[in-house]
Image 1 (cartoon, rainbow, N blue to C red):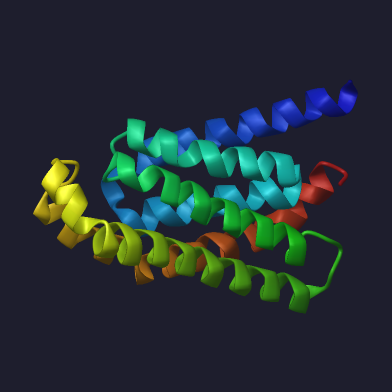
Image 2 (cartoon, rainbow, N blue to C red):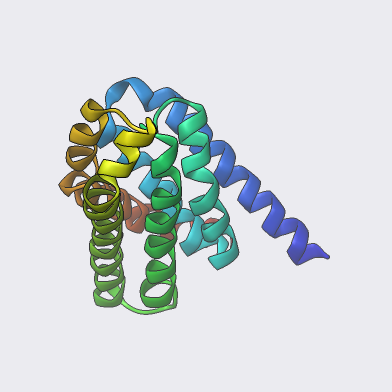
Length: 180
């Protein structure tokens, strides 16, 4: 019971932090908001564990859409996949007691994989393969189809790298303070 309460508390704190950062940084653009979100994702999984990380990864894009940060409802599932890939790989590679090289490897692999997942799903599938159907059905307009590739390409790699770097700097301090 104690572990369950701790998990609920840690997850709630991470979600509250995520919502607060998304709301506060919304006006600063993708680089700032995305980096903050990725930092929270990384801290969530490296401190709270896989359950906390996945929960935050899945809820984050829904909150982003509700706050007007995610550009389209159609991108929410893609962001969920990208976030989940990010936290899973971070946990699998960097989540243990490995040294600095393991932490850095996990951070780089997770960031690259998140970028690849989002690029493939949004840029190649949604804006490529699905574009004619989306336009015809009125689910997306031409300007959005042209804007999405810029949002879901290299900026995703940059924000995942920045957020992961910030997390790797603060996670040891948090683990020590929480006796983990």
